[in-house]
Image (tube, rainbow, N blue to C red):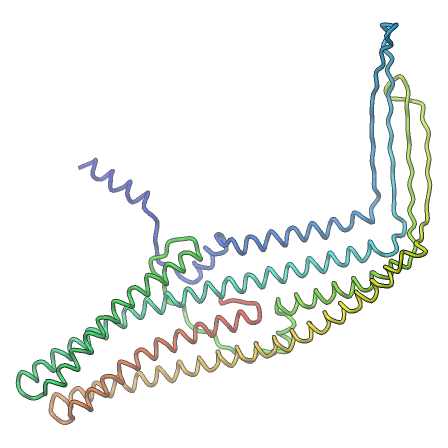
Length: 408
């Protein structure tokens, strides 16, 4: 008995852990396991160091060295040793403003990567939310399909009894039997769809998920200032930083027409003892100017100017496109919320009517066709509500993604 208990315990430990997950828990798991987010974060860190590195060009460059040499003549056993040391310093006093533009360009690159990180986050969490809603809908569809199957079975049994008593014809009986068969197929298909949707969610979270819990509800869209919101989106910021980089590169062409000035100093020592005490010091400054670099500086001015014009046009197109996409997504969300409310009202009405018609049918006050039509209307209303709920959740996720956010 003890061996059996131990064996079962081992199986539980080594078996994959599966559990039900809420949306907030899914967000926590994703933050820890998402390779896409981790990769984007590392890119931001690399850009931060690239920005810091850009400052090295305006700071002094220091270097030092020390050495010892030993000589033993063939005709003597005496060993001659000599020591040396040196220290040098160089500083670019004026580099034609190129160093300044390099720093500005590196900072624009860092801001671009930060916006790109936010964009990747928004896209990933949109995909995650979509997979979560797909799993939730599939889960609720299994329950709905099971309830509809029961309803179809009850209807089939009812018509069978009425057929046996001679109150219904064979065509009506076969119709209800066919509906039952179709509902059985829908139920089995819904279970397969649930399994597939949970697999997709599990792969995104890199954790085995057995079920999901329904979110608290849908947030109100409100009346956001889209003109203000659009310039805060990661996509707009990325285009803005590309424009800034092009502007910096265009202004940096001025360096091709300016001189560069540098200063350097050194101290060298040598001797047969350590530390060496005989030495010399020197310093110098230099000014250089490219009188004619083959016209490359002129060509660079035209090239960078054209690229700046292109970046400006791209920024304008991006802003208009973003503004339209945001309005479209907001409209879609508002429409989905309204459609959901309509679906709730329709379901309530069709349910009430189905219950009333059921009583009338049993008492012979309505015929089969009328009862059958209202039954189907009620079943379709249940499916429509589930579909409208899914559409509303997905529209909410898309609206959040459009401005670089996600459902919290």
